[in-house]
Image 1: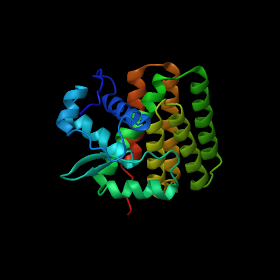
Image 2: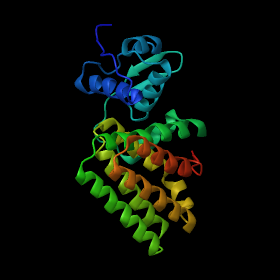
Image 3: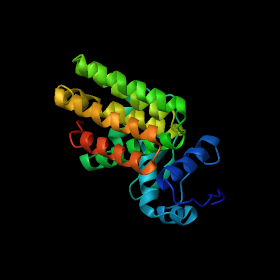
Amino acid sequence: MSVQFESLNRVTLTEQVMQQLAAKIISGELKPGEKLPPERELSQMLEVSRSRIREALRALSLIGFVTIKPGGGTFVGNQIDEMPEETIVWLFRQKVSNYHEVYEARRLIETAVYLACFDRKTDEIVTCIRKRVTLLAQAYADDCSPEKFNALLEALDIYVAQNCGNDVFYKLMQTIILLRREAALKILESPYERKSSVEKRSLVALEFERGDYKSVSKAINAFFDASVKDFTFSS
């Protein structure tokens, strides 16, 4: 294969794999319909484990950048700039067939998006995240509807994704938000769950302000673990 890849460092490996592959697809270096090397070859080219390659390919397949054919390999898809909600949901449901895969997709995407945003944070980003969390807290205090509260949660996640520096992750966050929406509205009928969401997002905002990567990662995993355990996938 004539396409050359750069070796990766050992920070956010799955994200780096996704970025390299997506960049080559968007630039046209990898052509629509072109078959990618097997996972073993890609792992050697990029100097990462096969599990990282598999995670990255699965995530890219969710938004149509690649098509994975069991037993047949992985092929470049047609890169889509604007994806309607119906297409996003359809693509996700074609690729994810059970709760375990949804769980793993959420953990990978939501955690990576927030950490990528933290890596690029500015005073303005930190301030905007704090303001959005404050709006959440006020909505809880006002006993707002689950729909309004969830809209604020989604707006926060979208803002973080827009500022994570990775267009692929931004699209993946859109996918996850759409998939979790129905379950989230049911969960957020509980005042306790709304309060828990405020507390955990407030902790994330606080750690963004403090600027310690490990503490931010711990806070993100805390709110993720609390939210994902209640998430169910309905086909």
